[in-house]
Length: 109
Image 1: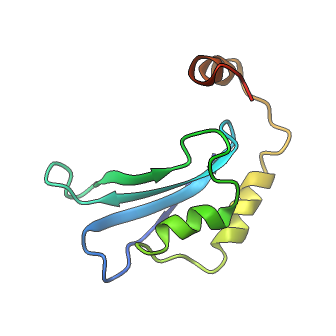
Image 2: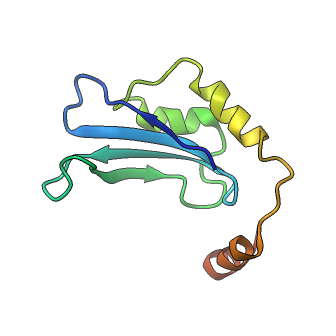
């Protein structure tokens, strides 16, 4: 799994950070945007969160599109996310990951 934290845009004072990455077990990219809340003013709460289902976001660009309105996105991020995905090619689920997938999704694929 990869994870890249992105700083908020200057015009987004309610955003703490955005995060994008690659989740190999779910075979999806993911995107999160953390907003300040009364209970979590410093850490924020992920009020936008995609990539929690197998294959939900199939490209780096899909994840970046979700966070782009809220965060500063480096020009090379799509390439880095694609590299993160390729680095996990051929990696198999461990026994705990396979068990969790069967429990959550009824399958390990």
